[in-house]
Structures are given as structure tokens and as C-alpha cells.
Length: 193
Image (tube, rainbow, N blue to C red):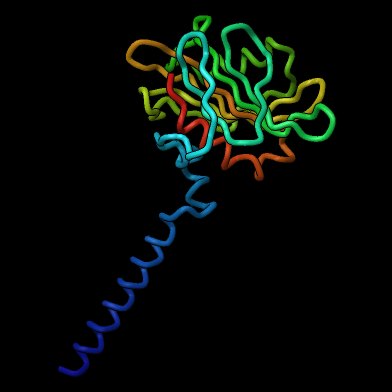
């Protein structure tokens, strides 16, 4: 009888330890994030104190204090976190859809679009067609590329809402990505097409 209790006790301890290890792996660790590079993408309102910019098509892009509206293409909303000189340390943009891009082909369309604008060393790191946003669903890519001025990492999503579609882009120089990523991810998560 005593031997059975000890055996059962050891089995319970082993199962409990295995369960704890499994649960620890499900948290917000870097390892968990690597398995789902879009785990951060959860529809949420912009943080209190953020400013809102709108495109001509009505898309809503929220951005934090300290970021500055900049002029880019007509009909878009663009803001940047400006560093020393005219260096851009962070960039957010909302653009109405303009071409033949679709949720289904976004992972091919976006890299080709970047290359068409002259970007070099385009590298797709991750893609999804199951992004959830406050106004609908979307497709997103995370990629890196090099312009004439710097190397960047970006999140670019095509979001389709009930009445419209829009693109949101969040980018930072590759060297600053780890510092800027939480803000950029929060802005994308609060985007409304």
C-alpha cells in the first residue's frame, strides 16, 4: 500500500511539473512570440492622450504624443517620430487602397510594391491573412528593406472594413526596431479602416 502511494505521488508531481512548463511556454515570452509574430495584433482603442489623424477615405490612425504629422501622398495620413536632423526614428501611415491589392495576395503585393518604389534587399519575415482589427479583418506582412537613406523594418496591413479598405504602415529603422515596436504595434492594433 505504501509503495502505491509513493508511485502515485511521483506521477502527480511529474504531471504537474510538465503542465507548469507547458503553461510557462504560452506566455508573452520571446519564444511564444516567435511562434506567432502577430500575437500582439489585438483590436483595441488607442491609448488615452494619443492624437487621431484621418485619411480622405475616413481611415483613423492614432499616434502618440511627440510624433509629428508629415506631408506624403495626397489623401493619406502620415506621422513620424523625428530624430536628430531629419532622421525618421518611427513612421506611421494610413492610405486608402489604390490598386489591385487584396487580402489574399497581400504577402506578394506589398514586397513588390516596395521594390517598385526603389527599395532594395526586400525580405518578407512573416505574413498573415487572419488579422483582426476594430473595423474588420486584414492581411499583414512584416518585412525589411533598404532605401537610399536607411534600412527599415515595417508592419504593413491591408484592412477591409464593412464599407472601405485601407492600408496601415508602421516602420522604423532596423537599428531602432526593438525600441519602437511596442508603439508601432499599438498604433496598428488601434487602426480603423
